[in-house]
Amino acid sequence: MSAADCHFHIFDPARFPYKEGLIYTPHPSQAGTADQLLAVFDAHGITHGLAVGAAPYGDDNRCLLDGIARSKGRLRGIALVKHDVSDAEITRLSDGGIVGVRINLHNLGMAPLLDARAPELLAKIKAANWFCQIQCEKDQIAEAMPVLKKAGVRVMIDHCGRTDPVSGPASAGFKALLELGRSGMGVIKLSGPFRFSKLAYPHVDSDAVVHQLIEAFTPQNCVWGSDWPFVRLDMRVDYGPTRAVFDRWVPDTKTRQTILWDTPARLFGFK
Image (cartoon, rainbow, N blue to C red; front, side, top):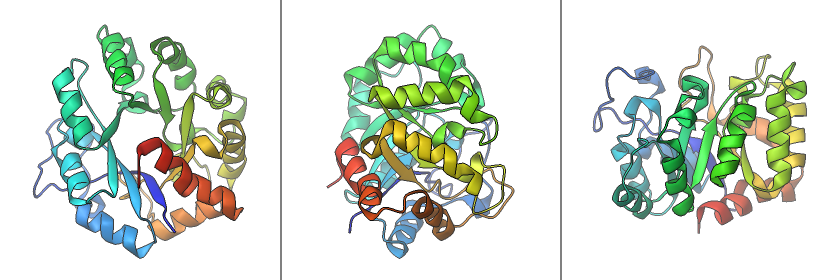
C-alpha cells in the first residue's frame, strides 16, 4: 500500500553546509540525510514524501533538490525562495520536483507577506500552480488570509496551524483555518502535535482540534506529515509513535488511506 509523509526536512551538512546567521542550526543528532530519510521510510512503510526546505539553508535549495533527485521519483519538495526569485529559477525548481514555497510566519511574523515585493512573489507562485505553504500560530493565519485570498494562491497550512488545544478553538486564527477548509481552497497538514500540544505524548489534547480540521477541510484536503528529523525540540520524538498519533486521529481505514495516499498523490503528482 502506498503512503506519503508530507512534512519532513533533509539536513546533510557534510555535503551541503548550513548558511550562517540564520534562525537555527540543527544539533548533529537532529540532522538527517536523504539516504537516512529513505531508510526510515522503508522501515515504516512510507513510499513517498514531500520534503520541506528549512531555515538552516535559507534560499539555498541544493540539498533539497539533491534529496529529491536521489529519491528516484519518491519525493517532491517545498522550497524557500527570495521575494525577487526569477521566473527562470522557478522553472528550474519546478523541473527539480518543487511544488510550492514555504512562508514562515511563526518565526518571522507578517513581514514576509507585508513586504512590498510579496504581491509579485505570490503572483509567481500562483502562475507556477504551486502551493503557498504557511507555518503560523495563534491568530497569524487570520491576519494573513486577506493577503492570500487577494493573491488567489493555493494555501497549505503546517502543523494544524499550531493551534493551542486550550484557547485555540475559540480564537480568530482557528476560525480562519476552519473557514479556509470549508472554502475548499486550502490544504491542512495533520502534523507536529508535539509542536502545539500542551500534554506529553501521546498528545491526546490534540484530538479535538484535529477532528474539527478534518471535518472542515475534508480528507480530500488533508495530508499527514511526521516532521522528521524532529529539530528544535527539547523532548525525544520518534517516527513510529508519531505515526501512531495519526492512526489514533483517523481510525477509519478508508479515510486513513485517503489522507495518506489518495490526497497527496493527487495534489503533488505522486505515482
